[in-house]
Amino acid sequence: MENLDYGIIGNCRSAALVSKKGSIDWCCLPEFDSPSVFGKLLDDEIGGSFEILVDDSYTIEQRYKANTAILITLFSDGENSFEVYDFMPRYRKEGGGYYAPPEIIRYVMLRSGKPKFRVNYRPKLNYAQGETESYIKPDFIASLAKNGRFETVFLYTSYDKEKVLAGEELTVTKDGYFLVAYNEKIFLPSTPKSYLDFERTKVYWLNWSNKTPNYQSYNDEISRSAITLKLLSYDKSGAVLAAATTSLPETIGEVRNWDYRFCWIRDASMVIKVVLQLGHENVARRYLKFIIDIIPDKAEKLQIMYGIDGEKKLTELELEHLKGYENSKPVRIGNAAYLQKQNDIYGILMDVICQQLEKFSTDIENGEELWTITKGIVWIVSQTWKEPDKGIWEFRTEDRHFTFSKVLCWTALNRAIKVARILGKKHKVEKWEPLEEEIWNDIYQNAWNEEVGAYTQSYGSKHLDASVLLMEAYGCVDAKDERFVKTVHAVERELCKDGLLYRYKNEDDFGEPSSSFTVCTFWFVNALIKIGERKKAREMFEKLLSYSNHLGLFSEDLDFETKRLLGNFPQAYSHLALIECAINFSRKDSEEKIWESMRD
Image (spheres, one colour):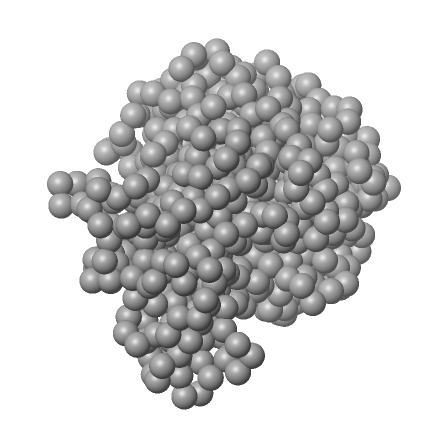
């Protein structure tokens, strides 16, 4: 079965996907959202790739170096073996700041014998629009886009450049390297310099991972997911991407193919909440600075998403020359959803601001700006909470009164009141509490469907929706509340299939969804933990973990039947929800051990 068997490497400026056979099939340079240099992922004929090829006598194994974003692919025929260490350099500079150039290093480490391999180096610049031609120069191989937008990329290597470009056999007699650079290097790379970059990058990631606490249960899964979330953060602005790819289909051969290389306020804020829980404060500080930078006007309404540099216009285009992942057209760049109105984003952002102020109330950067944003959010919510919207799933049809959106409008007021208390703004607490109560009563009366016996997708609807499982997580209802328990069971009856959840089953703009949205199953697992059904929750969680790829990574969706990964990859949503589940299990396991030790 075909699957998204890729590892992600990156340096918080861009990222690349490396297949389990050691082929770089996706990379955009110099930034995450730049046109692709290698795009085989979206067209296996013209997309472009950087492959390491061995004969059939070799086996290939792949793993991450523990607690790092360095990917190791081992090629061995028993007697002859070598490893390729793939990474994008990132480490602290002596004068402060980080060295994170737009480049990939493939360090070839000899393990035994005299192994042989060939290289298929075929960059295709500008999303493979037009021809890319490569030329051998004294110090590097230069690849140039021949028509359209001017672009170049440079390959430096310790191997014979003519043999590399011709795809001829190379023999490994000692360590060597390949370095793909967006910019021409001023100081020539070398094998020792590449090894030094490897060591520095390794130390960076080990130091970063060391800040993540050790957990009683699922520690490895938490660590890998945390690193993956870090790889989807953009240092320059503080933005957090939804995923590293565009147009990987939610279902093979269908048209739900979107560009996820942007910063959704909802996804990013949820990521930051989890990352802050893990102790990574710098990522959270950078993100809040990003938010402050994109809201210059007190009365300005938030868009649901922005470009990674804060761009507000994300025009959606189709690249008709690319056939798409497994012929799933169209391939899109940009995302028209930026024009949508989704009322839930204010509550999710307010939740992060509140968390930040609770954690750093005496030492908060930008505290006055965050208080201004808080007041602005309350003003906007007070004006808009009664209006219908597109909802969390971005329905492109008519607006509705979605339950999740109303819950997050309540959350916005609830957290704003907490912030006001932290900052001693008693008059605001008194002013805002009646509105908080009004929204809660509105949800209680209108979101519950007595006939269905659950909180439903939208007011007056009989349709169930996995997003209502988050009502408890945001504090809108108690886990022991009879209505919530009934809702969890109703969601299980209606939306669960073979251990995976539908987001919803009513038809949307493209018909009934035919794949499972991975984050929803994690939400359901969490809801089961909260209502006390831990045995069932654990069984479901461990089965879900088994559906990750060979490196523990998840995309956006899973096929109900085959369990193959679908949708953009790796998906921040999936990994943040994995971490939340794992932490909840770990806490419960720790509590049980404490009780057991007290009984001994």
